[in-house]
Image (tube, rainbow, N blue to C red; front, side, top):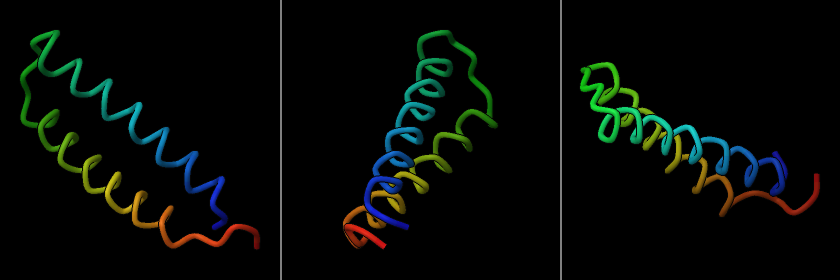
Length: 59
């Protein structure tokens, strides 16, 4: 995957993570599934950041 797609994936995962955190803590929808989703998207975010650091400029 090239660098621009890796950056796009990181941005989209970050937006989804912010929405889930907002839904859980600000709107007060405390659920086990929301907490699991936050953990899962944090893992996806760390993987995406690692991918951005190791991605080629052009394929």
